[in-house]
Image (cartoon, rainbow over all chains, first blue to last red; front, side):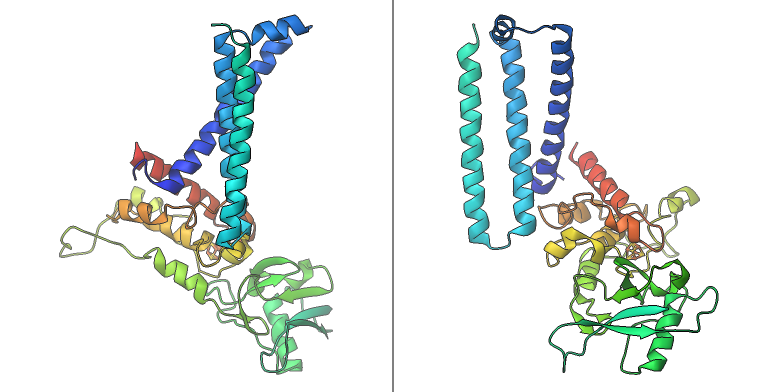
Length: 113
Length: 231
Ligand code: SF4
């Protein structure tokens, strides 16, 4: 088996993205709970920190990748017409890329380096 | 006791339909297979596959009140009435409860269900330690009844491409065998989006297996083996 093994690689990356999302969500949640009450200044300050922004960017990357593979899985299961499936998959991919770019723009506009 | 049995004659019927039967003589411990034999005595045009009558041959897999199982191992007293019996889902019906299992066997053949040895064959048999032999428990017992594969939604959607739980359990049976030397080829063959990775851990296979086997666990072990091979 090599890293090029497509089925295994996709499956593994989807699992890893889930693990990262879980770790991020739990630790971020705990962090927020420790800093109650949360106000606007505190929140916007938080996202000026490069570490927080990088961790959040990774979270959204994992989320979008996870969704991308998941939606593809559903389409491979249910849509057997290659043309329709391919078209839908391109649309989903474009949508996820748009979402990814948008969230990156927001996060990167806040960070102070 | 009331029964609704799937009937289908390709020469006269467009689609399968349910036909009502009534049995009055129900001895204690009667299995569904015995009941079907009584129904067949009432109505000779009805047919179903069966042979050993004790869960060894795997011929009488059918869908009983919505769940796949072997008629010979299912006591009628445990079933709610009317007892609805259909052929296993997802397989082309030949007649009544008899289905065409070609697709199922095709996948079984495709995983090469035999030992592959590259070394020169020994003069005597291929030896195996008792510990290594133990690793085949829970795998070799499969009777290829098809209950699991025909209960698997992933198989319903992609019957031509997804190997299905039964074939994958057997794939692992040979991967786990200390005498087999084709680990890498076998794993390579199962890669790709369809053959094994269509499994979404739905676990219908585990629920229905009349031999109490666990194809989902076997599939998981194949994935673990793939990971080990990769690293
Ligand atoms: S794993 Fe169980 S259900 Fe599946 S074919 Fe073998 S005996 Fe039948």
